[in-house]
Image 1 (cartoon, rainbow, N blue to C red):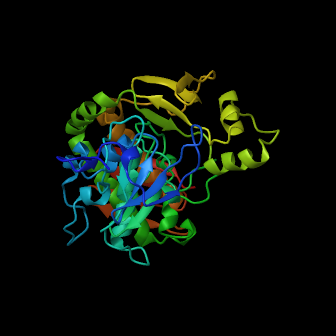
Image 2 (image 1 turned 180 degrees about the horizontal axis):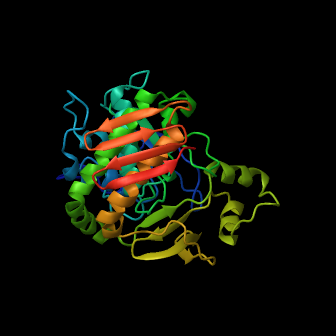
Image 3 (image 1 turned 90 degrees about the vertical axis):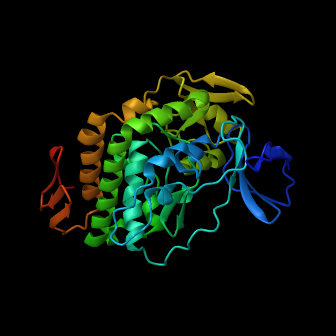
Amino acid sequence: MKLNSKANRVENSRDIPVECSQYVSDPHNFGQRVERVDFGGEASYVKPRPIFWEYLFFGEESPVSQFFDKPIGLRDSKIEFKELFFRLQFMSDVYLPSGGVVKEIRGLDKAATSPSTLDWYSYGALIGYSYIFGIHDLHLENLKRVGTGLLPIDVETALIDFKLPCETLLYPMPGSTHTKYGVHLLVSSINTLQADALELILKGYIDICELIVDSKDGLIKTLDTALEPATKLPIRMIFRNTKEYLTWIKGGVPQDIVVMVEELAQLKRGDVPYFFRKISSNNLYWYSEVSQVTPIVTSIKKGMICEPNVLLSYAKLVKSKLPTGVLHICQKLMPNNFTGNFQFRDSKIECRKNRITYTNTYGVFAAKRS
């Protein structure tokens, strides 16, 4: 194992003397998989793709973390927002296109059996954070529950301008074939959610959105600088549930399902189809050969990459992301028969039988109740 003496990091993951090895992911790009390795009594994950997105949005040393050093909005809590999100550690260069090494999460507080006040508040904050930064695929298997809430441990998709926060997969998304979303690490069914949990989710969501609004100028500059050497790194685009692909690898694609020729080619070689865009180009690519990147034939506009100044524009944050998220969370996670109000400083949410109204310093927003 080669270590960089300054950063104490693995310079080349292939030089790690593996004592114990286990594949822990599905095959992509000619059979490549995430591999769990043990060396020197420490476990890590060797990922055959860039780890930059985990580093940028959830890494302990991420330059983004400096904007989240404010206390969370729970009374008597001394925890800062950065402690909720920025917990991942790395043992290789995070800009390597070929892959990198992520340390296994250890040393964090164990999660309580039942969701705590912090769990629900942190969950709401994670919805807001991931929605605004366009982080997708945060279903149950890509998260770990720790003492500060849910922590993403596998991030391949970011910088997408989502219409709704459910596109993060932190709670059920209409039309999705997933059955286990991020919320299912806290409860087995969203139908069991109570009003007090919803209130904490909404408070966490509003607090993180307002913090990002206040920090948007610095965030844009920091993201632009961090992304400059990453313009050619892949940002994965996920169009179908992996479980569907695995079923098709074993039994073939059903005749009534239309698939792209690039999907079919990857399925035939036993791979879960993998597509990606780049910051420098919104074309959609795939690996037609081991080292051959090829644009796909079909034009797909879903999942277009956005520049930080677009994602974090003031109008988008206060007129779209903040109110849309509040209203949609209420629509999808509110207990069926609940009516009442939630008050958070300058924000008021009124939940009536057929209508939800959200009032804040930016305006009045309303939606029908689902």
